[in-house]
Image (cartoon, rainbow, N blue to C red; front, side):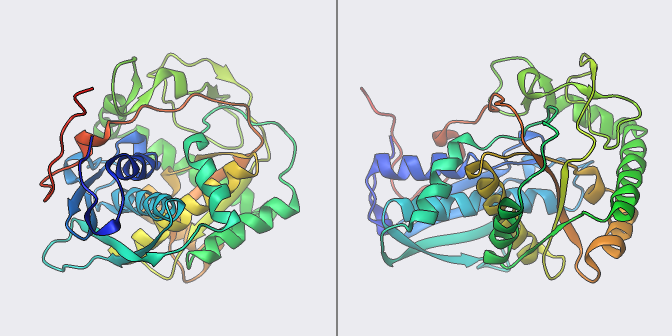
Length: 334
């Protein structure tokens, strides 16, 4: 148990709850590349470069996206405890792994919308399985775009048939290039198709089947080659999230927007997964930028639809995520 109130004015169990919510954020292959430091006046969120996937994410962009998602959950959970979070992003140029410092900016109760998103945090999943053929309603589409805008980002919904066909080809091109790289495949194998007992990575239970070879949207095989071919929906909602530009600050902003979009989808009963190959291969990402978002570099590509419940992926325990705390961290003797 964390035995401190600190500057946030939270009890130990409340602080534990806040950090647990932060750690439920999505990350590339469930690598969970974040650490937290409790100080006298708040919480520091740090990137953990030891958990960066160096082949798929050589620049650390997806690591910072994941940390941005954890930051959004942290903000939301603090609000749920009546704390108005005061966030400083990248506060120290000499410490680039320090993503944000969160302090108490006063108190206020959460809004109904914030309560709804907070309730969705433990239920959000990356659903790698086939979706139903039913279309996403216009009201839900508007809510997803509004969620991105609320965090200073844009969510382009790709509905033009020509653009969808071009994006499908780009996704296949990026996928084929990645799986032709032995280093990429070895890294993917290390983090996926895991048996029970691992606190991170993608377990077999969350892998999903493999799309048919002629499927409209190619997806990664998270089953370690054991997944059977299956028919996937031909017409999912494809959404491209972008911010003003590249660089650590914008990537952290994009991660927060991504998580707000994902939680909004969860709250509306929608399923989602990622088409990350489109943003991991540089020249493909550039072609997608020209096709979809113009001047804004795409940060995240989502597949959204109506799915069936899937199991969650494992998470490390909160004490494993803490380091160098100014206040003591002790196990509850009970």
